[in-house]
Length: 486
Image (cartoon, rainbow, N blue to C red; front, top):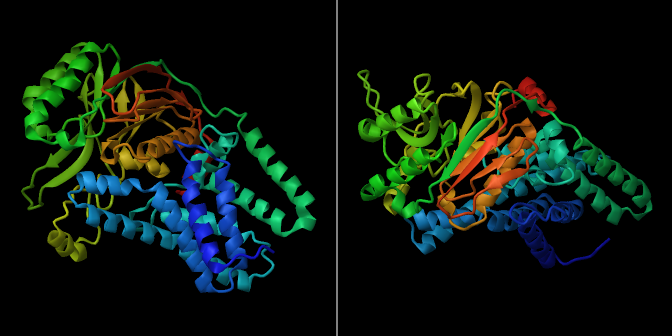
Protein backbone atom coordinates (compact mmCIF):
# COMPACT_ATOMS: atom_id res chain seq x y z
CA UNK A 1 0.00 0.00 0.00
CA UNK A 2 1.35 3.39 -0.96
CA UNK A 3 2.29 5.48 2.09
CA UNK A 4 1.89 9.24 1.77
CA UNK A 5 1.81 11.86 4.54
CA UNK A 6 -1.53 13.53 5.21
CA UNK A 7 -0.32 16.93 3.97
CA UNK A 8 0.88 15.48 0.68
CA UNK A 9 -2.37 13.56 0.31
CA UNK A 10 -4.43 16.71 0.52
CA UNK A 11 -2.11 18.44 -1.93
CA UNK A 12 -2.43 15.47 -4.28
CA UNK A 13 -6.22 15.62 -4.02
CA UNK A 14 -6.20 19.36 -4.70
CA UNK A 15 -4.06 18.78 -7.80
CA UNK A 16 -6.18 15.82 -8.95
CA UNK A 17 -9.34 17.91 -8.66
CA UNK A 18 -7.66 20.82 -10.43
CA UNK A 19 -6.57 18.54 -13.26
CA UNK A 20 -10.05 17.12 -13.89
CA UNK A 21 -11.30 20.21 -15.84
CA UNK A 22 -8.64 19.39 -18.45
CA UNK A 23 -10.86 16.47 -19.47
CA UNK A 24 -13.57 18.95 -20.50
CA UNK A 25 -13.69 21.50 -23.31
CA UNK A 26 -11.69 23.24 -24.60
CA UNK A 27 -8.86 20.83 -23.62
CA UNK A 28 -10.75 17.52 -23.99
CA UNK A 29 -7.96 15.38 -22.53
CA UNK A 30 -10.51 12.77 -21.52
CA UNK A 31 -7.91 10.25 -20.29
CA UNK A 32 -7.35 12.53 -17.30
CA UNK A 33 -10.90 11.97 -15.98
CA UNK A 34 -10.60 8.34 -14.77
CA UNK A 35 -7.09 8.97 -13.42
CA UNK A 36 -8.22 12.02 -11.47
CA UNK A 37 -11.23 10.22 -10.02
CA UNK A 38 -9.09 7.16 -9.22
CA UNK A 39 -6.87 9.35 -7.01
CA UNK A 40 -9.91 10.42 -5.01
CA UNK A 41 -11.17 6.83 -4.77
CA UNK A 42 -7.74 5.77 -3.54
CA UNK A 43 -7.83 8.33 -0.76
CA UNK A 44 -11.34 7.33 0.28
CA UNK A 45 -10.36 3.66 0.30
CA UNK A 46 -7.71 4.45 2.94
CA UNK A 47 -9.53 7.09 4.99
CA UNK A 48 -9.62 6.10 8.66
CA UNK A 49 -12.56 8.30 9.70
CA UNK A 50 -15.59 10.26 8.50
CA UNK A 51 -13.68 13.47 9.05
CA UNK A 52 -10.69 12.45 6.93
CA UNK A 53 -12.89 11.16 4.10
CA UNK A 54 -14.91 14.37 4.09
CA UNK A 55 -11.84 16.60 4.27
CA UNK A 56 -10.18 14.82 1.36
CA UNK A 57 -13.32 15.10 -0.74
CA UNK A 58 -13.50 18.80 0.02
CA UNK A 59 -9.93 19.42 -1.16
CA UNK A 60 -10.69 17.56 -4.38
CA UNK A 61 -13.82 19.64 -4.93
CA UNK A 62 -11.94 22.88 -4.30
CA UNK A 63 -9.47 21.92 -7.02
CA UNK A 64 -12.23 20.93 -9.46
CA UNK A 65 -14.39 24.02 -9.08
CA UNK A 66 -11.51 26.40 -8.37
CA UNK A 67 -10.16 25.67 -11.85
CA UNK A 68 -13.19 24.46 -13.80
CA UNK A 69 -15.60 27.15 -12.57
CA UNK A 70 -13.13 30.01 -12.21
CA UNK A 71 -15.21 31.89 -14.78
CA UNK A 72 -17.61 32.77 -11.96
CA UNK A 73 -15.17 35.45 -10.86
CA UNK A 74 -14.92 36.87 -14.38
CA UNK A 75 -18.66 37.39 -14.50
CA UNK A 76 -18.86 38.86 -11.00
CA UNK A 77 -16.08 41.41 -11.32
CA UNK A 78 -16.71 42.51 -14.91
CA UNK A 79 -20.47 42.67 -14.93
CA UNK A 80 -21.72 42.13 -11.38
CA UNK A 81 -20.70 45.50 -10.03
CA UNK A 82 -18.26 44.14 -7.41
CA UNK A 83 -14.69 45.16 -6.67
CA UNK A 84 -11.79 42.72 -6.90
CA UNK A 85 -11.61 41.65 -3.22
CA UNK A 86 -15.35 41.10 -2.99
CA UNK A 87 -15.47 39.19 -6.29
CA UNK A 88 -12.68 36.89 -5.08
CA UNK A 89 -14.49 36.37 -1.79
CA UNK A 90 -17.78 35.51 -3.50
CA UNK A 91 -16.01 33.12 -5.88
CA UNK A 92 -14.15 31.48 -3.01
CA UNK A 93 -17.41 31.00 -1.12
CA UNK A 94 -19.01 29.45 -4.19
CA UNK A 95 -16.10 27.07 -4.74
CA UNK A 96 -15.98 26.10 -1.08
CA UNK A 97 -19.73 25.53 -1.04
CA UNK A 98 -19.72 23.36 -4.15
CA UNK A 99 -16.81 21.35 -2.74
CA UNK A 100 -19.05 20.35 0.16
CA UNK A 101 -20.79 17.91 -2.19
CA UNK A 102 -17.57 15.91 -2.33
CA UNK A 103 -17.09 16.24 1.41
CA UNK A 104 -20.56 14.82 2.04
CA UNK A 105 -19.93 12.10 -0.53
CA UNK A 106 -16.73 11.04 1.24
CA UNK A 107 -18.33 10.99 4.68
CA UNK A 108 -21.32 8.99 3.47
CA UNK A 109 -19.10 6.57 1.61
CA UNK A 110 -17.10 5.88 4.76
CA UNK A 111 -20.27 5.22 6.75
CA UNK A 112 -21.77 2.89 4.15
CA UNK A 113 -18.56 0.90 3.71
CA UNK A 114 -18.41 0.32 7.45
CA UNK A 115 -21.89 -1.17 7.31
CA UNK A 116 -21.32 -2.97 3.99
CA UNK A 117 -17.76 -4.31 4.22
CA UNK A 118 -18.31 -6.72 1.31
CA UNK A 119 -19.29 -3.99 -1.14
CA UNK A 120 -16.02 -4.49 -3.10
CA UNK A 121 -15.86 -0.73 -3.68
CA UNK A 122 -18.91 -0.67 -5.97
CA UNK A 123 -20.23 2.13 -3.78
CA UNK A 124 -17.50 4.44 -5.12
CA UNK A 125 -18.89 4.95 -8.65
CA UNK A 126 -22.52 4.62 -7.54
CA UNK A 127 -22.20 7.40 -4.98
CA UNK A 128 -20.25 9.53 -7.44
CA UNK A 129 -23.18 9.48 -9.85
CA UNK A 130 -25.69 9.93 -7.02
CA UNK A 131 -23.99 13.13 -5.92
CA UNK A 132 -23.68 14.41 -9.49
CA UNK A 133 -27.44 13.98 -9.74
CA UNK A 134 -27.95 15.72 -6.39
CA UNK A 135 -25.74 18.62 -7.42
CA UNK A 136 -27.74 18.97 -10.63
CA UNK A 137 -30.97 20.02 -8.94
CA UNK A 138 -30.38 20.97 -5.28
CA UNK A 139 -30.68 24.73 -4.63
CA UNK A 140 -31.46 25.37 -8.28
CA UNK A 141 -28.80 22.97 -9.52
CA UNK A 142 -25.31 23.30 -10.95
CA UNK A 143 -25.10 20.53 -13.59
CA UNK A 144 -21.66 21.62 -14.70
CA UNK A 145 -18.43 19.60 -14.95
CA UNK A 146 -20.30 16.30 -14.87
CA UNK A 147 -18.07 13.44 -16.02
CA UNK A 148 -20.60 12.47 -18.68
CA UNK A 149 -20.19 15.82 -20.42
CA UNK A 150 -16.80 14.66 -21.69
CA UNK A 151 -18.46 12.16 -24.08
CA UNK A 152 -18.85 14.21 -27.31
CA UNK A 153 -16.16 13.29 -29.79
CA UNK A 154 -14.89 10.27 -27.85
CA UNK A 155 -15.04 6.52 -28.49
CA UNK A 156 -17.63 6.23 -25.71
CA UNK A 157 -20.03 8.90 -26.99
CA UNK A 158 -22.40 6.14 -28.14
CA UNK A 159 -23.29 5.52 -24.50
CA UNK A 160 -25.03 8.92 -24.35
CA UNK A 161 -28.19 7.99 -26.34
CA UNK A 162 -28.42 4.82 -24.27
CA UNK A 163 -27.69 6.08 -20.77
CA UNK A 164 -27.57 9.88 -20.79
CA UNK A 165 -25.04 12.01 -18.95
CA UNK A 166 -25.23 10.19 -15.62
CA UNK A 167 -24.84 6.82 -17.32
CA UNK A 168 -21.67 8.03 -19.01
CA UNK A 169 -20.48 9.39 -15.66
CA UNK A 170 -21.00 5.94 -14.18
CA UNK A 171 -18.95 4.43 -17.02
CA UNK A 172 -15.99 6.75 -16.35
CA UNK A 173 -16.22 6.35 -12.58
CA UNK A 174 -16.28 2.57 -13.01
CA UNK A 175 -13.12 2.74 -15.13
CA UNK A 176 -11.53 4.76 -12.32
CA UNK A 177 -12.52 2.03 -9.87
CA UNK A 178 -10.99 -0.70 -12.06
CA UNK A 179 -7.76 1.29 -12.36
CA UNK A 180 -7.59 1.68 -8.59
CA UNK A 181 -8.27 -1.99 -7.95
CA UNK A 182 -5.60 -2.88 -10.47
CA UNK A 183 -3.10 -1.02 -8.27
CA UNK A 184 -4.25 -2.25 -4.84
CA UNK A 185 -5.17 -5.81 -5.87
CA UNK A 186 -2.21 -7.01 -7.99
CA UNK A 187 -3.32 -10.65 -7.87
CA UNK A 188 -6.56 -9.75 -9.68
CA UNK A 189 -5.04 -7.59 -12.41
CA UNK A 190 -5.72 -10.11 -15.16
CA UNK A 191 -9.41 -10.36 -14.27
CA UNK A 192 -9.68 -6.62 -13.81
CA UNK A 193 -7.96 -6.01 -17.16
CA UNK A 194 -10.53 -8.26 -18.81
CA UNK A 195 -13.35 -6.34 -17.19
CA UNK A 196 -11.82 -3.08 -18.36
CA UNK A 197 -11.47 -4.29 -21.94
CA UNK A 198 -15.05 -5.55 -21.93
CA UNK A 199 -16.29 -2.18 -20.67
CA UNK A 200 -14.29 -0.30 -23.30
CA UNK A 201 -15.53 -2.66 -26.02
CA UNK A 202 -19.16 -2.13 -25.05
CA UNK A 203 -18.64 1.64 -25.12
CA UNK A 204 -17.06 1.51 -28.59
CA UNK A 205 -19.73 -0.83 -29.93
CA UNK A 206 -22.53 1.43 -28.72
CA UNK A 207 -21.28 4.16 -31.07
CA UNK A 208 -22.19 2.14 -34.16
CA UNK A 209 -25.96 2.72 -33.86
CA UNK A 210 -28.00 5.55 -35.40
CA UNK A 211 -31.10 6.63 -33.52
CA UNK A 212 -32.76 9.18 -35.79
CA UNK A 213 -33.63 9.60 -39.45
CA UNK A 214 -34.37 12.62 -41.67
CA UNK A 215 -37.91 13.91 -41.44
CA UNK A 216 -39.42 16.58 -43.69
CA UNK A 217 -37.72 19.15 -45.86
CA UNK A 218 -34.34 20.66 -44.91
CA UNK A 219 -34.47 24.13 -43.37
CA UNK A 220 -32.12 26.97 -44.30
CA UNK A 221 -30.99 28.83 -41.18
CA UNK A 222 -28.88 31.91 -40.40
CA UNK A 223 -27.42 32.16 -36.90
CA UNK A 224 -26.43 35.74 -36.06
CA UNK A 225 -23.58 36.39 -33.62
CA UNK A 226 -23.98 40.08 -32.85
CA UNK A 227 -20.85 40.41 -30.68
CA UNK A 228 -22.22 43.33 -28.67
CA UNK A 229 -19.89 44.03 -25.75
CA UNK A 230 -21.61 43.21 -22.48
CA UNK A 231 -20.77 46.56 -20.91
CA UNK A 232 -22.33 48.32 -23.95
CA UNK A 233 -25.31 46.07 -24.56
CA UNK A 234 -27.81 47.74 -22.24
CA UNK A 235 -26.82 51.38 -22.72
CA UNK A 236 -29.88 53.28 -24.05
CA UNK A 237 -27.77 55.27 -26.48
CA UNK A 238 -26.66 52.01 -28.17
CA UNK A 239 -30.14 50.57 -28.71
CA UNK A 240 -30.62 51.96 -32.21
CA UNK A 241 -27.24 50.78 -33.51
CA UNK A 242 -27.73 47.33 -31.96
CA UNK A 243 -31.11 46.86 -33.61
CA UNK A 244 -29.78 48.10 -36.92
CA UNK A 245 -26.88 45.63 -36.75
CA UNK A 246 -29.22 42.70 -36.37
CA UNK A 247 -31.77 43.96 -38.87
CA UNK A 248 -29.28 44.67 -41.65
CA UNK A 249 -27.76 41.22 -41.56
CA UNK A 250 -31.21 39.64 -41.37
CA UNK A 251 -32.57 41.47 -44.41
CA UNK A 252 -29.42 40.58 -46.38
CA UNK A 253 -29.82 36.88 -45.64
CA UNK A 254 -32.07 34.60 -47.68
CA UNK A 255 -32.39 31.93 -44.98
CA UNK A 256 -35.88 30.64 -44.22
CA UNK A 257 -35.18 31.01 -40.51
CA UNK A 258 -32.97 33.59 -38.81
CA UNK A 259 -32.00 33.17 -35.15
CA UNK A 260 -30.72 35.97 -32.92
CA UNK A 261 -29.15 35.19 -29.52
CA UNK A 262 -30.44 35.63 -25.98
CA UNK A 263 -31.65 39.21 -25.28
CA UNK A 264 -30.41 40.27 -28.71
CA UNK A 265 -33.11 42.94 -28.46
CA UNK A 266 -31.99 44.90 -25.34
CA UNK A 267 -35.39 46.44 -24.66
CA UNK A 268 -38.89 45.36 -23.71
CA UNK A 269 -41.23 44.52 -26.56
CA UNK A 270 -43.48 47.48 -25.75
CA UNK A 271 -40.55 49.84 -26.30
CA UNK A 272 -39.63 48.67 -29.81
CA UNK A 273 -42.79 47.03 -31.12
CA UNK A 274 -44.31 49.75 -33.31
CA UNK A 275 -41.15 51.23 -34.84
CA UNK A 276 -39.00 48.11 -35.14
CA UNK A 277 -40.65 44.74 -34.55
CA UNK A 278 -43.84 45.25 -36.53
CA UNK A 279 -42.17 46.57 -39.70
CA UNK A 280 -39.52 43.84 -39.56
CA UNK A 281 -42.12 41.16 -39.00
CA UNK A 282 -44.19 42.38 -41.94
CA UNK A 283 -41.17 42.38 -44.23
CA UNK A 284 -40.21 38.83 -43.20
CA UNK A 285 -43.78 37.67 -43.65
CA UNK A 286 -43.89 39.02 -47.19
CA UNK A 287 -40.65 37.17 -47.92
CA UNK A 288 -41.97 33.91 -46.46
CA UNK A 289 -39.36 33.90 -43.69
CA UNK A 290 -39.25 33.70 -39.90
CA UNK A 291 -37.15 35.11 -37.08
CA UNK A 292 -36.48 33.80 -33.59
CA UNK A 293 -34.93 36.26 -31.14
CA UNK A 294 -34.18 36.53 -27.46
CA UNK A 295 -35.82 39.50 -25.72
CA UNK A 296 -36.68 40.54 -22.16
CA UNK A 297 -40.43 40.45 -21.67
CA UNK A 298 -42.53 42.66 -19.43
CA UNK A 299 -46.03 41.78 -18.31
CA UNK A 300 -47.60 44.88 -16.83
CA UNK A 301 -49.42 44.93 -13.52
CA UNK A 302 -52.86 43.36 -13.85
CA UNK A 303 -56.20 44.69 -12.66
CA UNK A 304 -56.20 41.97 -10.00
CA UNK A 305 -53.29 43.72 -8.34
CA UNK A 306 -50.50 41.43 -9.49
CA UNK A 307 -47.17 43.24 -9.77
CA UNK A 308 -45.18 43.54 -12.99
CA UNK A 309 -43.43 40.37 -14.12
CA UNK A 310 -40.21 40.17 -16.09
CA UNK A 311 -39.19 37.19 -18.22
CA UNK A 312 -36.13 36.19 -20.17
CA UNK A 313 -37.98 35.26 -23.32
CA UNK A 314 -37.98 34.37 -26.98
CA UNK A 315 -40.31 35.73 -29.66
CA UNK A 316 -40.98 34.89 -33.27
CA UNK A 317 -41.50 37.36 -36.11
CA UNK A 318 -42.50 36.96 -39.72
CA UNK A 319 -44.45 34.16 -41.32
CA UNK A 320 -45.01 32.20 -38.11
CA UNK A 321 -45.71 35.13 -35.79
CA UNK A 322 -49.49 34.79 -35.78
CA UNK A 323 -49.30 31.33 -34.20
CA UNK A 324 -47.20 32.25 -31.17
CA UNK A 325 -45.61 35.73 -31.20
CA UNK A 326 -44.22 35.22 -27.68
CA UNK A 327 -42.81 31.78 -28.30
CA UNK A 328 -41.09 30.98 -25.04
CA UNK A 329 -40.38 32.20 -21.49
CA UNK A 330 -37.30 30.84 -19.76
CA UNK A 331 -38.27 28.26 -17.17
CA UNK A 332 -35.07 27.63 -15.21
CA UNK A 333 -33.47 30.83 -13.96
CA UNK A 334 -29.87 31.24 -12.83
CA UNK A 335 -29.60 31.70 -9.03
CA UNK A 336 -27.84 34.93 -8.06
CA UNK A 337 -27.92 36.04 -11.71
CA UNK A 338 -31.57 36.16 -12.78
CA UNK A 339 -33.13 35.88 -9.35
CA UNK A 340 -32.04 35.97 -5.72
CA UNK A 341 -32.84 32.77 -3.80
CA UNK A 342 -33.94 33.10 -0.18
CA UNK A 343 -34.55 36.77 -0.94
CA UNK A 344 -36.17 37.48 2.42
CA UNK A 345 -32.93 36.54 4.14
CA UNK A 346 -30.38 37.78 1.61
CA UNK A 347 -31.93 41.02 0.33
CA UNK A 348 -30.71 43.14 3.27
CA UNK A 349 -27.17 41.75 2.90
CA UNK A 350 -26.92 42.41 -0.83
CA UNK A 351 -28.53 45.82 -0.44
CA UNK A 352 -25.84 46.66 2.09
CA UNK A 353 -23.08 45.40 -0.22
CA UNK A 354 -24.70 47.14 -3.20
CA UNK A 355 -24.69 43.99 -5.34
CA UNK A 356 -27.15 44.18 -8.28
CA UNK A 357 -29.40 41.24 -9.11
CA UNK A 358 -32.14 40.76 -11.66
CA UNK A 359 -35.70 39.94 -10.72
CA UNK A 360 -36.91 37.67 -13.49
CA UNK A 361 -39.86 35.32 -13.11
CA UNK A 362 -39.80 31.74 -14.35
CA UNK A 363 -41.98 30.77 -17.28
CA UNK A 364 -44.63 28.07 -16.94
CA UNK A 365 -43.53 24.44 -17.04
CA UNK A 366 -45.78 23.59 -19.99
CA UNK A 367 -45.03 25.66 -23.10
CA UNK A 368 -45.60 25.04 -26.78
CA UNK A 369 -42.78 24.28 -29.22
CA UNK A 370 -41.79 26.85 -31.82
CA UNK A 371 -43.29 26.17 -35.26
CA UNK A 372 -41.31 27.16 -38.35
CA UNK A 373 -42.13 25.97 -41.88
CA UNK A 374 -44.06 23.03 -40.52
CA UNK A 375 -41.23 21.95 -38.23
CA UNK A 376 -41.43 21.82 -34.45
CA UNK A 377 -38.38 23.27 -32.68
CA UNK A 378 -37.61 22.75 -28.99
CA UNK A 379 -36.25 26.02 -27.48
CA UNK A 380 -34.06 26.68 -24.45
CA UNK A 381 -32.37 29.83 -23.21
CA UNK A 382 -28.74 29.82 -22.05
CA UNK A 383 -28.25 27.76 -18.87
CA UNK A 384 -31.34 25.65 -19.58
CA UNK A 385 -29.46 23.51 -22.10
CA UNK A 386 -27.71 21.93 -19.10
CA UNK A 387 -31.04 20.39 -18.02
CA UNK A 388 -32.17 17.50 -20.26
CA UNK A 389 -35.73 17.58 -18.96
CA UNK A 390 -36.07 21.15 -20.30
CA UNK A 391 -34.22 20.64 -23.57
CA UNK A 392 -36.26 17.53 -24.36
CA UNK A 393 -39.68 18.68 -23.16
CA UNK A 394 -40.98 18.90 -26.75
CA UNK A 395 -39.52 15.60 -27.87
CA UNK A 396 -39.95 13.31 -29.70
CA UNK A 397 -42.19 15.58 -31.83
CA UNK A 398 -39.58 18.32 -32.25
CA UNK A 399 -36.98 17.57 -34.90
CA UNK A 400 -34.43 20.25 -33.94
CA UNK A 401 -33.18 21.72 -30.66
CA UNK A 402 -32.67 25.50 -30.59
CA UNK A 403 -30.74 27.24 -27.83
CA UNK A 404 -29.98 30.95 -27.59
CA UNK A 405 -27.38 32.26 -25.18
CA UNK A 406 -25.30 35.24 -24.18
CA UNK A 407 -21.97 33.93 -22.92
CA UNK A 408 -20.52 37.42 -23.11
CA UNK A 409 -20.90 37.42 -19.32
CA UNK A 410 -17.88 35.11 -19.10
CA UNK A 411 -15.35 36.91 -21.29
CA UNK A 412 -12.54 34.76 -22.61
CA UNK A 413 -12.87 32.14 -19.86
CA UNK A 414 -13.54 28.39 -20.09
CA UNK A 415 -17.32 28.80 -19.73
CA UNK A 416 -18.34 29.27 -23.41
CA UNK A 417 -16.47 26.13 -24.48
CA UNK A 418 -17.86 24.12 -21.57
CA UNK A 419 -21.34 25.40 -22.42
CA UNK A 420 -20.95 24.31 -26.05
CA UNK A 421 -19.82 20.86 -24.92
CA UNK A 422 -22.98 20.49 -22.84
CA UNK A 423 -25.08 21.38 -25.90
CA UNK A 424 -23.22 18.69 -27.84
CA UNK A 425 -24.18 16.21 -25.11
CA UNK A 426 -27.86 17.11 -25.53
CA UNK A 427 -27.53 16.43 -29.26
CA UNK A 428 -26.10 12.98 -28.52
CA UNK A 429 -28.70 12.07 -25.90
CA UNK A 430 -31.63 13.04 -28.12
CA UNK A 431 -30.09 12.28 -31.54
CA UNK A 432 -31.20 15.75 -32.64
CA UNK A 433 -29.32 18.58 -34.35
CA UNK A 434 -28.78 21.66 -32.20
CA UNK A 435 -28.84 25.25 -33.46
CA UNK A 436 -26.93 27.46 -31.03
CA UNK A 437 -26.97 31.24 -31.46
CA UNK A 438 -24.90 33.33 -29.04
CA UNK A 439 -23.94 36.96 -28.66
CA UNK A 440 -20.15 36.54 -28.48
CA UNK A 441 -19.65 32.81 -29.07
CA UNK A 442 -19.63 29.97 -29.45
CA UNK A 443 -22.30 30.08 -32.18
CA UNK A 444 -22.50 26.64 -33.79
CA UNK A 445 -24.51 23.99 -35.58
CA UNK A 446 -24.24 20.57 -33.94
CA UNK A 447 -25.24 17.41 -35.73
CA UNK A 448 -27.43 14.68 -34.29
CA UNK A 449 -24.20 12.76 -33.64
CA UNK A 450 -22.83 15.52 -31.40
CA UNK A 451 -20.28 16.65 -33.98
CA UNK A 452 -19.85 20.39 -34.52
CA UNK A 453 -20.66 20.82 -38.20
CA UNK A 454 -19.87 24.52 -38.35
CA UNK A 455 -19.08 27.23 -35.83
CA UNK A 456 -18.11 30.89 -35.70
CA UNK A 457 -14.95 32.26 -34.06
CA UNK A 458 -15.48 33.77 -30.63
CA UNK A 459 -15.75 37.53 -30.18
CA UNK A 460 -16.50 38.25 -33.84
CA UNK A 461 -19.55 39.79 -35.51
CA UNK A 462 -20.56 37.17 -38.03
CA UNK A 463 -23.38 35.09 -39.47
CA UNK A 464 -23.44 31.32 -39.83
CA UNK A 465 -25.65 30.20 -42.72
CA UNK A 466 -26.43 26.49 -42.89
CA UNK A 467 -29.04 24.01 -44.03
CA UNK A 468 -30.25 21.77 -41.20
CA UNK A 469 -32.16 18.52 -41.65
CA UNK A 470 -34.86 17.95 -39.00
CA UNK A 471 -35.04 14.36 -37.80
CA UNK A 472 -37.30 11.99 -35.94
CA UNK A 473 -36.65 9.03 -33.68
CA UNK A 474 -36.46 8.08 -30.03
CA UNK A 475 -33.23 7.12 -28.31
CA UNK A 476 -33.30 4.61 -25.44
CA UNK A 477 -32.37 7.44 -23.08
CA UNK A 478 -35.32 9.55 -24.20
CA UNK A 479 -37.63 6.58 -23.74
CA UNK A 480 -36.31 5.57 -20.33
CA UNK A 481 -36.11 9.12 -18.97
CA UNK A 482 -39.68 9.89 -20.07
CA UNK A 483 -40.86 6.73 -18.36
CA UNK A 484 -38.99 7.61 -15.18
CA UNK A 485 -39.90 11.35 -15.34
CA UNK A 486 -36.23 12.29 -15.17
